Structure formats: structure tokens, C-alpha cells
Image (cartoon, rainbow, N blue to C red; front, side, top):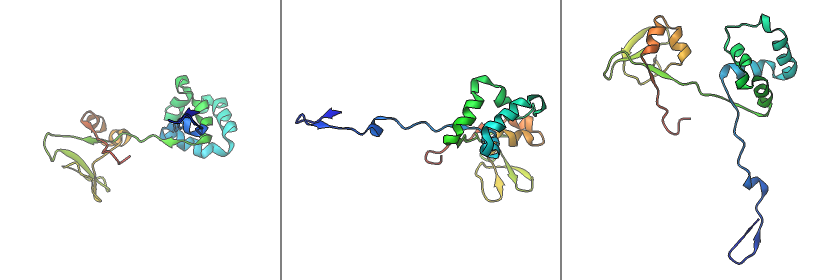
Amino acid sequence: MTFDENNKTIWAAEYLLLSPAQVLKVPQFVADWYEQHRHKLEYSIWGYIYDWDDQDCESDFYDFMKNDNLKPVETLIKMKDGYEVEKEPLYYVHFIEGIGGYLNMRYDGHQRSNGKDQNYEYKTQFTEAEIKAMDKGEAYWLLREPVEEVEGEA
């Protein structure tokens, strides 16, 4: 409750005093698992843990589930109330200094070096997984340059 200049009481609605709850953000692989299992979530979580030795220990989801600091079970349960998928960082592969020194990849896998603007034919922005999956991907990863997010494009 507050008072105006004439000492009259002004009531503030409780919802105006509370800050909005932060949206839970999760990686894409967590969202994928959740969407596959949300109809029987508790049972699916139990089953995953029960069959721990049979799980794919190379998967990102396995790493997520074994990391206590990430609170994986709590996170999966909270996802029932809504969540957003984290936007994965994008990178350019910058071969040589200059305007035309960026990796451009066509839909059929053809690569060339050119500018960093994407168009309908050539892709220039890649995720870490996309870069590392390329032939010479580990070397390309060393040449990465983060894509600067333009304000208003979120």
C-alpha cells in the first residue's frame, strides 16, 4: 500500500509487486528428451536412472543427467510449467583476413571461401556441432569467430 500526495491510500495489486518468474532455459537435447517422455515423465525419469548402465554414456543427455550441479531431475520436473530452448551459439569459420575469407557451405556440401553474409544458397553461420562434424572440423573449430547477435533479433 502507498499514499498519494493527499495522504489517500492507494492499494497496489499483489501481482504488480512481484517480479515475473524467470523462464527456465534448457539445451535442445534436454527439450528433445522431455518432449518424448512428458506424458509419463516421472516413470521415464525413474526408468532412465534404473537402467543407468544401459544408457548411451556418450550422449549429451547422459552427461546432463549425471551432473548433480545441473539438478537434472528437478529441471525435468520444472519443465512441466514451461521452458525455452537455449539459443545455441553460432560461429563463422574465418580462414584468412579480409572480406572474403569466410567459409561458405552450399546445401549440397560444396564449400568455398567468400563473405560472411548468408543467403538462400550458402550458409555461413554454424553451430559447434556442425563445424566439428565437417571434414577438417577440428581445424575449422580453431578458426571460429562468434556471430554477434544483432539487437532485436532474439
